[in-house]
Amino acid sequence: MFSSLWREKKEEYSRLMEMRLMLVPLCILLQLASVSSTAQATDQGYIDSNAGRTLQQEQDGNHQIHCSRERSRAAQKIIQEYLMPFVEKEKYHISRSCKLHPDNDLYRDQEQHKSHININEWQCGYCKKFFYEEKNLDQHFDNRHSDLLNLNQSQCLADLCGALHCDTEINSGLKKSKCNPAAAARNKHLCESLADSCFPVNNGPAASRLHEFFLHQFCDAHSCTGSRKPFSRGRRKKTSVFYIIASVLLLMLLLLYYLYIYLYQRGMNKGTQVLRRISQTGQKKKPS
Image 1: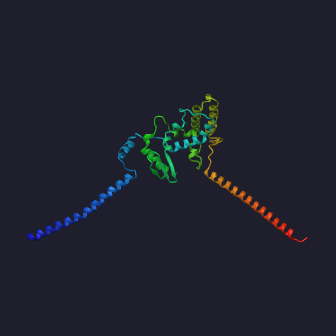
Image 2: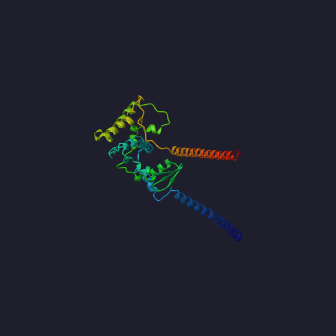
Image 3: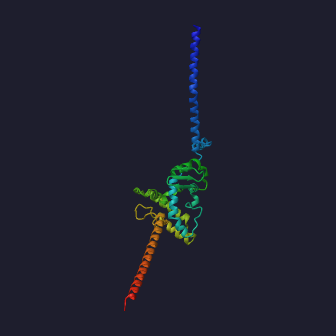
């Protein structure tokens, strides 16, 4: 009886040991998979030693910036295309105290550290990481490089969008919304204050001309009558790459055409001279 019980216990113990031996490889595989996934996440830039601290900083609000990057970008584009060409033509230097000065753009340094490599390829100029879309790069700037922003001296250009007609630039293909007279009056007042602070009429003839230009280019359109359109004085003329290529090809075709005409006429002249020689030789051989 005791021998049979001993045999059963021994067989049960053997089965338990076999089950443990079978589970050991499975546990090892699970640990390897966990290590592999962690390493992969680290290589892709989603996990690093500062991840917890960065997240905590964002939750604490130390780097929260309430400034629309999209509208600031639109405002900067409008300034560069519809204002600066005329300022450069007058050889006028905008004061640093003017809100339109390039150095007052909060996102200027980050925008200058963008590289558009290809259609679906953007690169961060700080850490050289690549992204599929510009919005992903913008999010990367907010999460990883917000400490590089000059929050003390720079300003949010999006605050000037009302004066600079940013909505016209952003929603160029959409139907225009109904005009609000109170909003139009506020935007016109902001626009005129920009003209007074950036181009004081007592700063000389160039400043006086630019002051008048700014009123016509931006401020006069802040009205619900619809009689004036924004950017009435035009914009910076861009030379299209397609236009340059087409012009070069057209010039090459013209050169080939005139070369063909020249060679054709030269061949015709040679043929005429040969025929004349042949006819002259035939006439000389005839008996008198």
